[in-house]
Length: 357
Image (tube, rainbow, N blue to C red; front, top):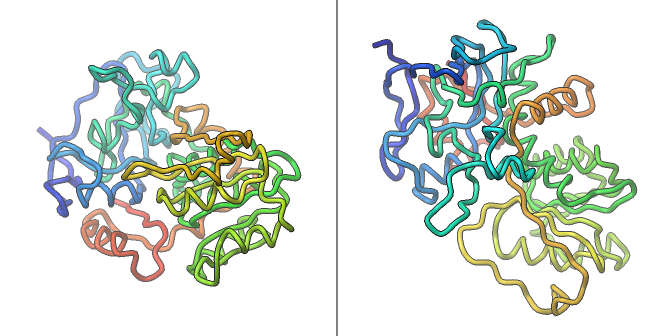
């Protein structure tokens, strides 16, 4: 049986490059030869044992590649075609999909709903930090890459761009809005770009890393706030002349950033949560207006599927946003263990790492 190289979760604090059989293609699947992928913060949570996955699983959920083989029932695509697939791979026919929540497509639990069910790559099935990846429900998830776009131009679409943009979309950003984005990692930076595209005219980015504050300005932030230079809430309320923001986007996943994002809302404002939280959240009574402030708190998981991917690539192709500056480092698949070491320790100004087999 033919074999391939893959980054495999062995145990806590060990993801190693090893070999696996190349997957066999089922009737509705597509086998993709990976040309570029990347590392995600979620992969680091897996590495550290903070997010549980099965031992022996191939990690990674941001695939760009070429169709190697199509299942017998897959129509509308051709072998040799350049494609991406979203990090979230909905079936298109589950209860969640038919309710308009395709990101939550997946098996339930004995007690009912299981969140993040649509995230399969590197979570419940083998992912794409490998030479090949098997894409399930290919007709719902493959999206052809437009001519003229490079791998790196579309590399953010499967996850980071879709997630960040969804923070602005779910927050209901409108023309003329004031928006604050907490934490300017890759997702937060994409939230800045998404807020600008949605029509926000005042966008406040919150971080402390100079390079990230600089990229935020490139992507549309009109103001940046360094949280080490004073109380964040006070700084933002001063910038908004005491009004507060229409939408705050929390892109880190901590109690302190969540609470700050809530405290800066105008009456009736919306907190759009993108962070992955590792413990229970507490909603302070005063920040929430004792439950009477008309506030909205919404959450979202990276929208996937081929139509979402098509739309995001159209945004890239139009020149409306350039996310190439987010790729700061490049490694071969053979060196992925070194890439994990760099990325997990956030050394050398790393934001996103491109991996090429």
